[in-house]
Length: 89
Figure 1: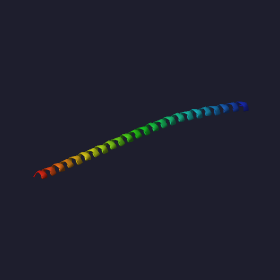
Figure 2 (figure 1 turned 30 degrees about the vertical axis):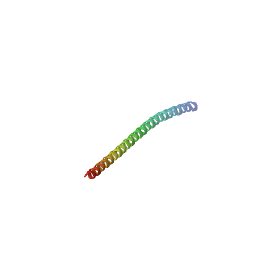
Figure 3 (figure 1 turned 90 degrees about the vertical axis):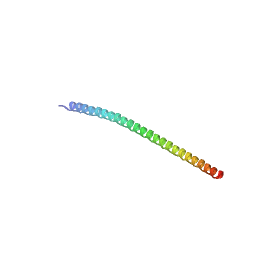
Figure 4 (figure 1 turned 180 degrees about the vertical axis):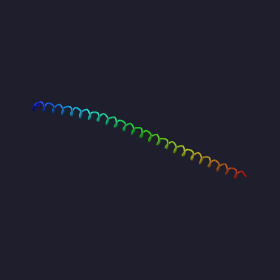
């Protein structure tokens, strides 16, 4: 083989390797994008779950607060009734 033929073959090989590299890089980029999208989705889901948990906790706190208020109200009413009973006697 002469010098020119070897150079052309070498250029083709380099060219093919470059194409492969570009393809691999683009595939990697697509994979990275997909992974990134998946991570973002997971983060969004986690945030939603956290928000739901916070809402539930808030509801639970509010419910307990209402129950406590109701209980106090009943106790005051009972005390009032007791006082009234004692006054009547």
